[in-house]
Image (cartoon, rainbow, N blue to C red; front, top):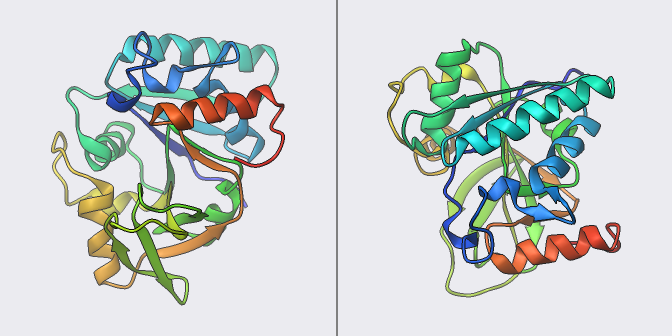
Length: 241
């Protein structure tokens, strides 16, 4: 089945990573001579994405330059994928950024949402087939940093806050399939969170589906994990993340 358009959340300030990457926005953090986002785009194309829209704010001009250059390279390589971007007038949060994109682009159909700092080795096809509204979840050895997602009968029943005790658990993988009409009730320019404001409403209505992924996952938001991703790429992706 065709893969829906992918909206990429790339407007954050990346505060936790600035101690080691301060001259460029987090999605452009260097990894063996290439921006991190370059690896993500190539992975998404390999998974079947044909249109990506990047939602920008912090250091947007640097990301815009990279996206324009990447689009030119894709055309030269005859790789079929359209890249475009939208700059937020102010920080809008994950939900506000998506709502702004829905209105600005006139989106009517379902679309995917991904984070520009999160690597998932697969999941685009699986989540596309799941339908909207849905999220991808992934199991990690230590869910302390993320909080846990509880699922029954392929539906999310609760998002548990970050716990005091560490341990294995299923977490929100940062990849969503959402219907455009879900954002019709929000005013354009209003800052809000998909995770804190939208998902709890869907859970209360028993509407939020979940699909479990078995794939490489990492969020480079902290130096430790950024360097881990760099080592993984340097090793030609030997082993698992």
